[in-house]
Image (cartoon, rainbow, N blue to C red; front, side, top):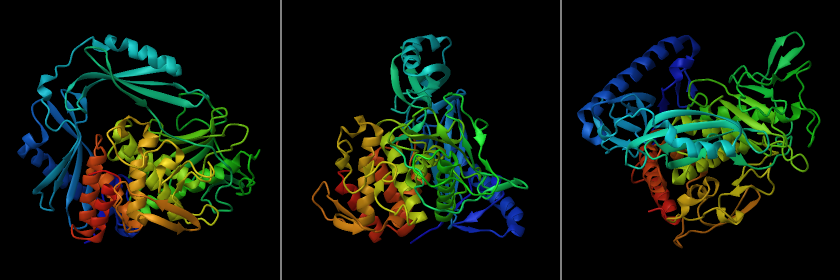
Length: 533
């Protein structure tokens, strides 16, 4: 049976309460906000009590503290409270979990990351261990120009073996002058590198201007005859970075786009009008915001109503785009300077901003299978932004970044056609670059949506095989993406792998459609078809 969601985690802060996609009338928003805050506070209090009652289940004990990250309340009152934990004041990486409880607060179960049964009491914070990471930091500074680093002592428990570690973020410039950062996690005792990953969430491609033709965009008139690319409905602003190559790029950087007649850009490829790229960036950011709010009742990237800062013309000949949590910004470059213009098409913008949604929910680690799922989440939901927009120039399809990287950068029906991505899960998938291990999740999404075999959709021919020679009948991408989003926001954690994603999506399908539904059966069949059992 379908159960629409009521997401309360940050709507109170924005003063807007939504049930599904239907907004509460303005005159009752204050009363609704107070009620929502009360329901949320009660859910958190009961969840804390459930953790205390079931301390063994959560590996919760002396020296630990819990910090609420998100709360999801279903229409029937079922509550899902997401916690992160600290030990003796230190963040525990891999210690996050979700408490699931009935409307009356009675305990239903939990979803836990790697630290749910580890002896944190064996971890004793030490002083002066930072120097053991010196070798790793030297390598990091060599990889990032104009680098500066910020170390943080943490408890590393993502692999079930808790130990002290330094998490050091190195910020600087990439090879084309774009803001770039890398995170190094090193053992505080031995100095050995535990893991290394990009601080930013990136997708690689090329761009073309005017991807969506003539569109309406929401602007703000600042004074008579002066209009600005400030979206008054969603709160995002679009700026010219002026090819800034500083790692300190933040929301206050750059120059806001302004205009005298509220007519922007010229619609040409390789345009000398710098506002042309801004048109697509501004409009497609709005479409991404609207997709999440209309489809899932999510009020912005962090579900707090806050709009992002969107920069175009970042770096010099930077052929890329990325989301940055540190400045709550979307960054797009100018292409390679010779054949490819800006990367601001619908599914690319949706992809990058979805990295922000992932960070605000499950926070999937950007390495191993979790990293592949992180990228797959952005591919899947970014593509759904394109389906939501239904733009006649950028026709919806299962070809990721086909406008900015013709004929496509990645595709869903058979990901291996790019020569690098994985169609099927294997033990080696976690060792692939996250942009290629994402193929398993993308293939699952296509099979769950459209089914196996040959098919033509919106004029594009697809032919999706299965890894177990089975036949899969799809349920449509609206249902498949709804299941994925619920799995991401309620059941996945920072260390979820593909096997965990199967469990999470089956739980989501059960919640939305029932355990005996065709949707539940298709979710299972599609995972089996990509060798995730």
